[in-house]
Length: 502
Image 1: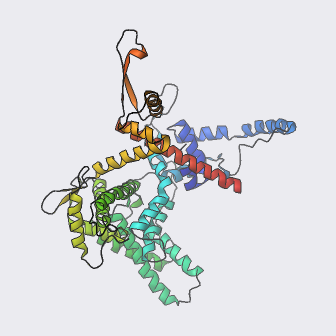
Image 2 (image 1 turned 30 degrees about the vertical axis):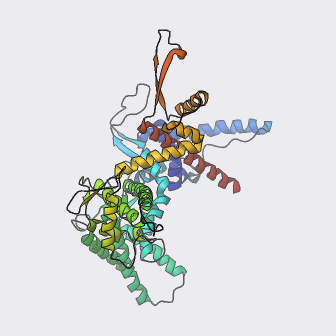
Image 3 (image 1 turned 120 degrees about the vertical axis):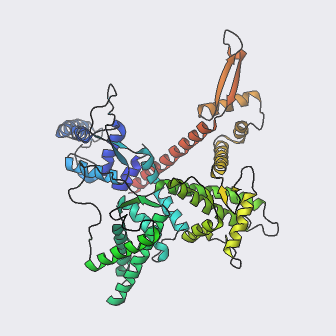
């Protein structure tokens, strides 16, 4: 159950019980969830378990636990608790709601027109990557210290913890974290100075949030909490905290959104924001593919400077991939860009230009244009296409396909050896017996397929021609599934190891 750790990690044991039920039963209504849980966690089960416990204990064969317990251990019997759990799972995107869904049954037909809840596999699986998202944002947009660089990471972490929240609430939580750190450090600053610093910091937090919204790292969330599980009062920004701080937060957020976003803050007032996992995945893949592009550019760099060759081109390609991801998210299908667009991305993501990617004694715009021309010269696969008028278009899909093929080759080589990898790529020939064994291994692993053509009516295998092949999409899906399974097993093994130490 790949999404169960995400449910437990995000909202502890109690919502995981609801998640496990939905994962096993499929789309289910709220009355159905309550019925299933009260049946399996009811009083009658405990009576049966106590009688079984007496028999087992008398025989000295072990112990048996009770079904009912405290909520922190994952036991649910109160319908109000079930609603709270569903609300938490909906806010974090682990569960989604739909009207007129299909309830699994003997005839597999719709059981009514109520609201059905089911696990959102794609969103829940991404929650395991939250730590990678934080590291990526820290490397590109800022770090994690108590300064300007720490704002981006703290905003992202706040949105991850809250699931979704209004802009003012995000700023208040981040500011509260900074203020608690100052109180722990026993600062000797007077009240007036602290108040001035806080107002300036609130402005920086609001500006950082507006920049992340502008880059589509944080996006507007649709209403996901249904009426039957929602709270009576409004969930979100209530202006909690001191009145002076509330006014400052509202003013700074309005100023930041007005200057950074089209339509200003008026059109976005009351909007709820959440983490855009899709664009973060796309940005992470862009950073991984850029290493391949940088490697190719480094191979063609000047011999007198082999150490820095390709770094500038890699940084420019990463910026271009970020720009393409933003356009794809905004459903803008014109992927051409100019050098000025790359400079804008580098300005909002200063981490891309670190690590000696650009020479300090030369203008950065000139280095960007030189890198674009260098990238346009790469072929098979192409990294950039020059469209004329000093405009370029990124060849993202071509580079991604090559990187995926290389990953498949490395996977086969590490799992079954060089000989198997060479057979898989069709480069070398081996003895017939070894070849058959390797082909059988690839076939049972889902990485190869064959078609048989009998030459006789008896269909004898000795008189049959076997045509072997590998479909790229199926191979990539099989490798992705194997890697996901391995990661889940590693996490489970680590959790068991930690619990055993306790």
